[in-house]
Image: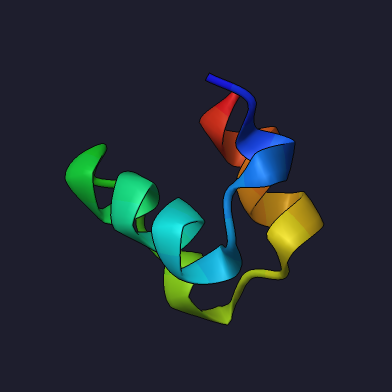
Length: 36
């Protein structure tokens, strides 16, 4: 999956599914880094 092609809402949804804390305040680039 290419995270760059997802929007912020989709990235936050993925972060939530993975149980990552603090994702709601992250920028797109930060979300991509933490989800890799």
